[in-house]
Length: 185
Image (cartoon, rainbow, N blue to C red):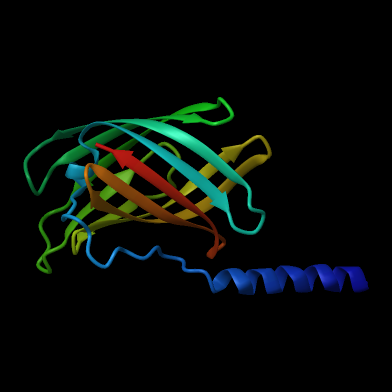
């Protein structure tokens, strides 16, 4: 009985500690240049990234080859981004985002919706203050099963052709991991 209380207390305290972590990554105070979804992901690019779990310290590194194409007119464009992932353990995966631009907003923001093979529902994208915010839920498949995770990304230009995508990953609403993906254009 004492062991169960100790374990339960550890889980609660661990959860409380994680809630003090941000659930949304901070945007830079002044990005090098304003960035749009089309600027960030149209054409070919290569990126390197790392997924890191805070509680365990586990990490997984990857390289991704990106190929984005845009169709349609401003205000009603479609951006398709094929992502070919190669993980440090040799595993490979291909995912494809399809983003649809919404009509211009009165507040000056540009909004998109998106879908990928592993997303649950629709991703939301907001271009505002020179950065891109991407929020979505995805089912992460691993040898031990499927885990539903939330992602909150901020994507910004650092200058010199380098774009950073910082993400906070949540499970059951609690921050559990972070991802940093550096895209070289």
